[in-house]
Structure formats: structure tokens, C-alpha cells
Length: 201
Image 1 (spheres, one colour):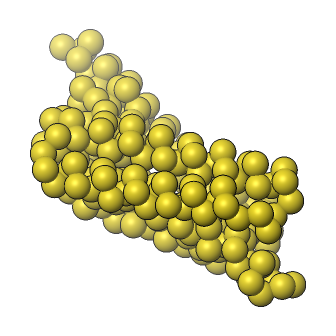
Image 2 (cartoon, helix red, strand yellow; image 1 turned 180 degrees about the vertical axis):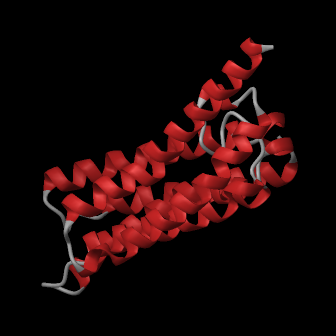
């Protein structure tokens, strides 16, 4: 791990730890909710450390899209910060709950950012759509991520507009299908197509 990555690991871990400390100190929630929050923030600290160490591997640094790797390094402090804001807001502004809207919009933006950088992401075991059969086929990896770019962008837009109608039985299945099922099925189609081509030779 180089100096820049160590600095990022330190800063992101400190941010997660600071929010974890605030969660421990804060007692404006019910005891059960407070316990759950403390566990979530504590888990975020550990996941952030593991994630940053994994993203420092040679395979990721050489093949992963640089901005997507950077986003992944900061994903935990950004996520817990967003969660903290949404959690504290109702305590500050009584009677106003923005948690659901905040979460959907935040995840929507995150999906769109990831989708935007998918085409620049090369084969690696940590960043991107990590279907095992793609790790040995650069062309199929690229085609799947190019399709995934569109489906994740569309998923992000669906999540952002979701708070306008709250029809979760439509939005959630669509997002799951677009972000997971469609790229998965397409990657399997490419895998079996290539396998058939190789067997025919």
C-alpha cells in the first residue's frame, strides 16, 4: 500500500470512527434504535478498513477504473455520513422525516456514478460486476459492463424519482432486474456463446 492509499485509509477510518463515536454518545433515540445504530457505525469502520486494504491490491490498481476505485475507497464514510444526516434530521426538525427519500436519492446518485464509470473498468476481482466467469474474458467483461452502464444509470434514475410516487412494488423489482438480473443474464449469454464457439473449433 503506497503513501496516498495509507492516507486515504487513515482519513476515511477517522471519519467513520468519528461518526461511530457520535452514535455512541447520542442518546436521543430509543435504546434499541441506538444499539442498532452503534452496531451499524462500528461495522462501517471495519468494512472501510477491509475495503481500502483490498482496493490497494495490484490487480485493482492496474485494471480498475481510477475514479471508481476512488469512489469505492470513500463509499463507507460517505454512506454513514448520509445515514447520520438522515437520522439526525428528524431529531432537529420534529415531525419531518426524510429518511426514506434521502436513502433512495442517495442510492440513486450512487448507482448513476458507478454506471458512468463501468465502461472504463477493466477486469479485476473487486470493482465492478464480479461474475466469476467474466474474470477470465476481457471482451465479455467489457461488453457486460458497457450494458451495465446503461442499466445502472436507469436504475439510479428510477430510485431518484421513487419518492414522487412511493410505488415500491414497481421500483424495487425494476431496480433489481436492471442492476443485477439483466447484466447477469447477458454475461451468461456471452459465456455460453464463447464456450460453444470454442467447442466448435
